[in-house]
Length: 147
Image 1 (cartoon, rainbow, N blue to C red):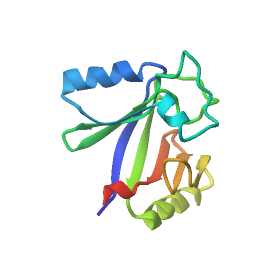
Image 2 (tube, rainbow, N blue to C red):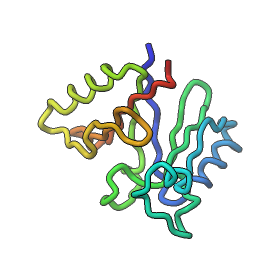
Image 3 (cartoon, rainbow, N blue to C red):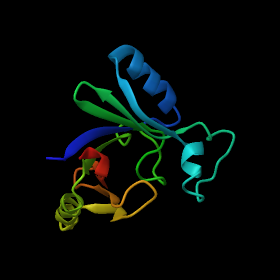
Image 4 (cartoon, helix red, strand yellow):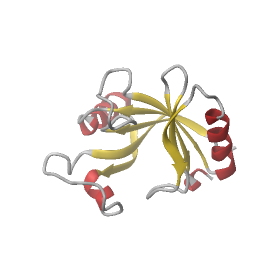
């Protein structure tokens, strides 16, 4: 099975600090770290400033068998950062049909809010974000590297 669920933390400008904290205190291994500057090379719609160029767009840490993803912003950019909306689940699979199936199952419930429709973007063939009826934001992502 190629499916995994990771915890995703939005850190409101403190992602770099949080990454170093988890590496130091939990012996986390850094698997990936992409800054806004790195991301702007792939996505010309990203506006870089002196204040955000070193922000973390996406990172992945390994803690034992668990992956912890850390970035700066919440899943819904118009939403103010609050403790509580800074945590989401990220369901990933190397099986595209599996991700599409989860997305379709979730969005078939009228109580589920679509934040970002499942679609191709600069880092995945299929990526979307929904919010379940209980306020939990769920990212769904096809990731061929999981094979």
